Picture 1 (cartoon, rainbow, N blue to C red):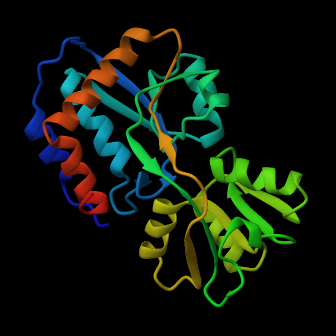
Picture 2: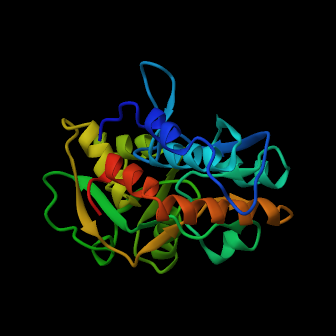
Length: 251
């Protein structure tokens, strides 16, 4: 999933598109860039790349707004949004009732599912039911964390080890500090493609589908409406499909 210059293509396609709601100024965006292929840091340039990054830049272009993206800790995303430090959060955030109690979400923009990552030579793990007595590594406060925590509470998992980033959780399995990582399937695929020598594999989908949304402060209904209008437009004019194709291939 190598990324070369799609942002320039997106901006060239969009210029400023006509929307029912127009905006101006700077769109302050927070992300956590440890969630390849949705958001990650290019090690050579320091640029923030990924599906989410292209999508939010396309939304900003559609709204006629400059997009300024900060990479902050995952645990700080929602608090920073609630404190009005940012206008929105895009970081592969799954829409859940608990999160929706604190923030508003855009219409879903991506459908995902959880998987289990384990050592390549492990043969007895194919589903969540196979994790009894295992140690799970997760990125803190993600749906992988929530799912693993539920399994632990039900007496299945031996323990749950929480890490700040997905690569840290993966490393825990590599060194034997954990048996599995519970993580979003596209993220597992991207990690394994970027690290072909890692002695890891994923087992495919192990949960019901989940949906990502762009988080907006509940006091900013106007921006939420603009984001949804931009998403609709990008899907209608083919820009969303072009970004999806760049990162995931044909739908």
